[in-house]
Image 1 (cartoon, one colour):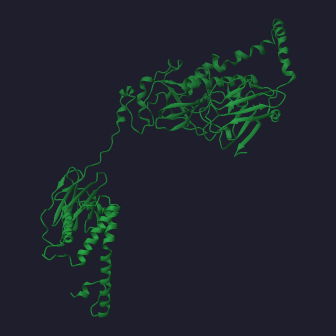
Image 2 (image 1 turned 135 degrees about the vertical axis):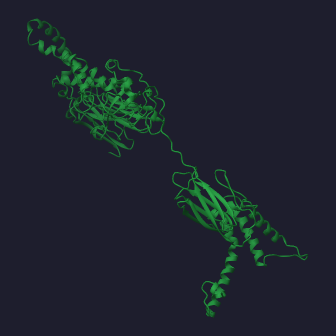
Image 3 (image 1 turned 90 degrees about the horizontal axis):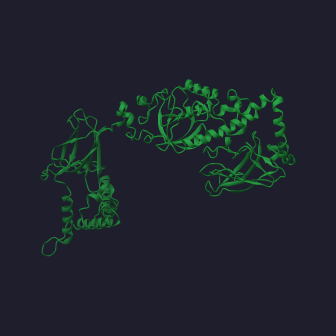
Length: 611
């Protein structure tokens, strides 16, 4: 074969063409040789394909590369370039090799030392390699890689990636998958080869091998052990006393704690306590669902805030927060204008009945706060009821210890049964009926209110002395207000109620406040009024703030100012507390809205970016 056949681009008989290509190849080789030191310094300095790591045995070359390493590599390149330029070696007058040639020899020796005599896998096992000097220049050999599992069975479709160290500056990569015998064959040349083996379900394995003849490599992969779920043991009856055991991350609950206060009323009827562990099929294996509840799931949580008697906010063990609406019960509203006596059987639709229910709504909120706030409870959903209500709140029972707090509200007369479907409906109906027949709690209205209207009609002869005696002081007490009758509607108060001050910039809940002043000449009866921001239903920034409810009997006299503080405290004649531990009013701007007991706007004051 002629030279023209061996050189790309040349053709037989094309003398001019071949001559031009020969000149081009010559100058290209010259420029490549001239740029060699610069390219070598850049490649080693940037640790391209791990070149610096492999040449770290040479003095001045540091693993990872760097500016200093690149400079040293560049100097070495210039030395090699000089050696090549003068024919590969210089001799002095005595015939010995000069120092540059010695340096070149040292570099080549150091590079040869980096080839390992034995191959070591990443788990410490050694594989046999050929350590004899290569007896063939640029020889090509077959390297057979066999991949087995720990039982020495072949692994099919394992990926075997091989990286060839063809030269200092270049690295080629091949990857193939094993056949049915777990084997893959590569054609390799003399040198060192890095092999990485991966397979689904097995731990990867990295191996380095040096070859100069036909060779075989066997690699064993260890199976990845799957984590077993210990909570399956909780299905046994003994799990009743093993509440601290489950700690796996899939359960969003903390360890079950005992309720500090158990409701006294439901202990006599709660027989299913010892059998609760049979419900370990719930999604949360660490918390038992009471057997009295049909299906559903139970999770442990901490009550972070009580919104009212039948609504609380909780935080689960994984940090998730949710608003829980107590399923099956309804306590009276804590806003006078929203109280509906018609929802409570036997209570008349009168103002007196509204005031009565409003007071019991406040009592229910205080009772829930004292029993639940800050406590660790079980939140239990019911498979027969809806999971969430129309406002997106989680519908659930709250269990303190073994007591159903929802049921306790009914037994103590704090609530009525909410007309809906749930597994304990019959039991809840019985509890309400018993409380109503015994006049417990809010059902005691008739005993308090009916004597005056019923007895004044019939026994007028015997009761006339009593009213005449009590009527004498009554006019004297009401004479003062008659001179300056209090206004109680939004229309009457619009022109005299103003926002006179506020502190909403960077203040905490106990320092944040607004001030309302009566600038008129008559008092304002603010009983049942509400104070909130512009958002619908008084929700502030989505945080679930309920409006400030002005207590019954609160009157703001002429020239008087009431301070409404966001934090917690006890109401006085000139200070009202919202009862929250975080800021309410937006610093950037908000709208202060005051509504009368009918929901009409008495004051709307915008500030900041809302003005």
